[in-house]
Structures are given as C-alpha cells and as structure tokens.
Amino acid sequence: MPPTYEDVLRAEQAIAGVAHHTPVLTSSTADAMTGATLFFKCENFQRMGAFKFRGAYNAIRSLDPTQRRAGVLAFSSGNHAQAIALSARLLGVKATIVMPADAPAAKLAATRDYGGEVITYDRFREDRAALARRIADERGLTLIPPFDHPMVIAGQGTAAKELLDETGALDALVVCVGGGGLIGGCALAAAAIAPRCDVIGVEPAAGDDMRQSFDRGEIVEIPVPQTIADGAMTTRPGELTFPIVRRHVRRIVTVDDAKLVRTMRFFAERMKMIVEPTGCLAAAAVLWGDLPLRGRRVGVIVSGGNVDLDRFAALTGPGG
Image 1 (cartoon, rainbow, N blue to C red):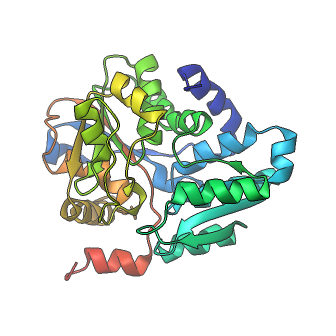
Image 2: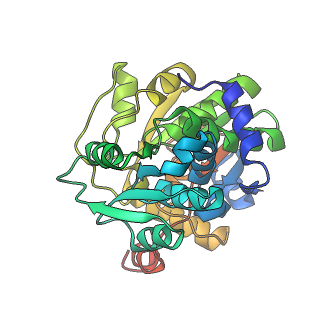
Image 3: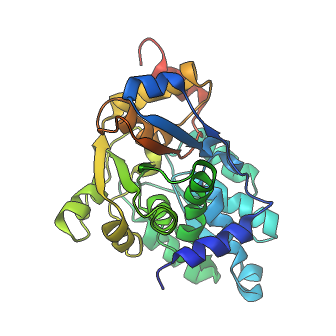
C-alpha cells in the first residue's frame, strides 16, 4: 500500500528519541544571493550522516518478530546501506548490504563498522535489485529497498515535518531527488501541513530519470548516470514514489556537477559544514539561479554529508 501522511506521523513517533532532530540553519549570505529567506534542514547532522536513517529505522522497527530474527537485506550506493546497518544494530537485527564496488570508501567502511555484511557488485554490469532479491530469497531475509518502500518513504517525510513545525508554512520546499523516497515523504508532509507550499525536486543533470518521468507522465528508465552525486545515480523512479511525486510535486529541475562543487564550497566556506555532492542538489538549484525564489520563504533539504575527505578536497580544491 502507498504511504500516507498518517504513516509519516506514525514514523515520527517510531523514531522519536532515536533519530536526531536535525538543526535548521540560515545564512544571510545565501539570502542576499537569492533574494529569498532560506531555511536549510541539515540532515548531514543526522545519525550516520544522512536522512536515510529515518526511513531505515522506521522500516526495520515495523517488522514482525519472525522477520527480525531472520534479518534484513538492502541494496544501496552508501547512505541507505549505512542507515540499515546502524538501524539493524540498534534493533538487534542482522543486516546484509549489497553495495557497488565503486561506492565511496568512507561509505563502505562505515557500513561495515556499523555491523553490516557487505556484498559488492558492478553497478554498470549487474542489476542490483535482481541480485538483492536472489540473495534475500536464498537466505530468507526481508528486503528493504532504498526508496520504494512505504515505511522508508514515511520515515523520510519526518524531515519535512520537523522543518515545517519549526519554520511555519513555507512558500516552497526544495528537495534532493534520487529514487524519490525523500521527496515523496516530504511531499506528503508538505501537502498536509502547508498545502500552498510548492514542492520542487532537484536531480543531477546527468541522471534525470525523475524529471523525464514527471514530464512524460510515466516512469522512464535511463542508463546508469555518470555524476559525482553518487546517492542519486538511479535509473528510474520507484513504483510507489512516482505517483506521490506526480500528485504533490510542482516541478523537477536539474543541476550539473559543476554547480554541486560550487555548493560544496559554499557550505564549507560560508556555513562551516561538510556536505556530500548529492546533499547539495537542492541548495545548488536555489543558490545559483535555477529557481526564481526572490521574496519567498524557502525550505532546502540538505540530505547528507558522507563524503571521503580526500574526495572532498579533490573536488573543491584549486584544481577541482
């Protein structure tokens, strides 16, 4: 069944006291650049460094005792992997994670450190979902996909609910887009709390499967995109997430990798925080003029901060 706002409210209760209530930061420099009043919901300060903890914990907590004893399996480029591994450890559940071999080293290491068993694959030659289903069937594990799962979507929506509870109604909410779990959950929350708020999604220009799908009114599948936004290298929206996006999202825009790097620098230099490329998607569209937001009160979801420091330095340094 597709999730509802009531599921978001239940997720909020389920993760209370476990997930961090992440800060909402402002920047006078960003406001001056855009002519808008911006509120950055900083999920880079969430447990394991990304919003994914919300949905992962909510999904595992919803399992019955038999499923918990058997264990869970997930596939992910990194943040969902870490979120499942940490959530499973907190709930006493064994976690197996299928991850691309070229995932950031910090994400691979963190997933293992949280207690997850990592199985790697070639993202350009193997179908991760098919591989995960096969392993889950062989081992009797419950599969928790990274975005196309009702309890995952509901958990992610708690980020927008927290933001709107703190700021009051906003004119616009700009959200990073991969497979649609975050924007799907956030759109459910915004539609219920602030129905006049325009929800806008932002994808990497090289991986615009949601934008193409949104424009055509049906799910479009693309080749594996080449982008530094490793958390948004999806090839198609989810069967659950896409209908939510079609119903509740105003538009989908894209930004190129160069703008993501500029945004990483901005966050580091002006707001003193490390944000991964995928986490910069929404802010990049806001800061560099892709969206006309002058005079509006705008929420911006900063989705995560898990990036290798060497990689961060290489991208944002003089030669980046």
